[in-house]
Length: 211
Image 1 (cartoon, one colour):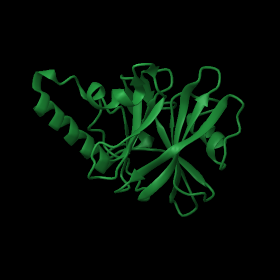
Image 2: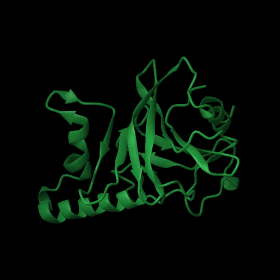
Image 3: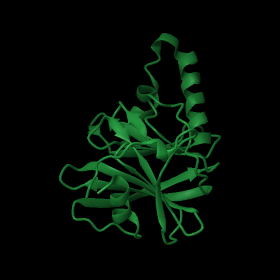
Image 4: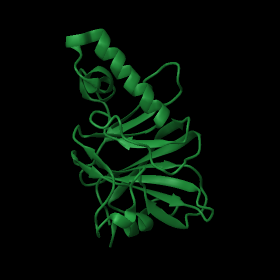
């Protein structure tokens, strides 16, 4: 079974039925432009948004964990409850799935153990924050993970949770949905479910394939 066929089987309904997965609705993400970016924000903060235009507004976010390991297997954003009639791999500008060999994917690399979903406007806010911190701290700047992300995932008692919603700019409503990626480092693809009018219904990023 290909990745796409497996995604179709798992996520075409409004709920996930698989004894190997545990699903959680964890909050909402705000998209201001509808241009969605998926990346490791520590190493690929210049990642291009997907070519699909998504709706603007607040949308529910779900995490699906592998029960056995308690690791994040899938991250999901839901845009509507319309019936899904087709699934496609998400691509950025210049990518064409016809250029892929069987079982090859387009996606993003993770080296920090963390992935995220965010609007392109929010990505700009994050990059501006990183530049401000770098110029204000100089040699004391420890990198954007230590300066910004770390406190959302760890406190003096240890790990807080496997995900967080972060606002890189007070003046902009955009949120970053950041989370642990599967077993850690890897290269991860996203898949978009469309309705009969080719409007996006949901997007799924896969970190552990559960069949």
